[in-house]
Length: 138
Image (cartoon, rainbow, N blue to C red; front, side):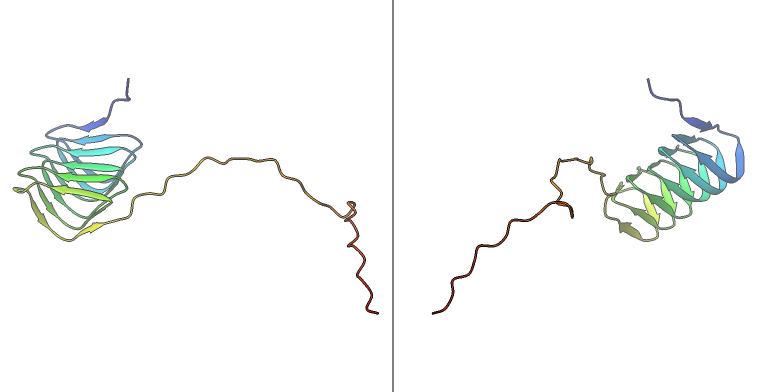
């Protein structure tokens, strides 16, 4: 079972910096800065006047401010974004409004597991074999 997301209900105004370690669902209004470790969902009828940083963003309402995501941004039908969108994956519905630039970023690098192998080390105490004698010129 996944952890529940934080919800800002309809009729609520939050002003300032919002930090959510997981998902955030905005049904009301937000002003300021929003940082989300998971998915930010701005529902239909919701309004955000904020700079947004999140893993993923799903916009169904209105956003005024820049959006920066490490994953994907989806701007749904009837949604409006006034600001720049930067993410590796961006989808904008044909009836959505976006007034700003869209930059596709390279995806986040994936960390590879460390593989340890056994190696042989030569130290100062190990004697190397002598090279074979050279033939003499006669």
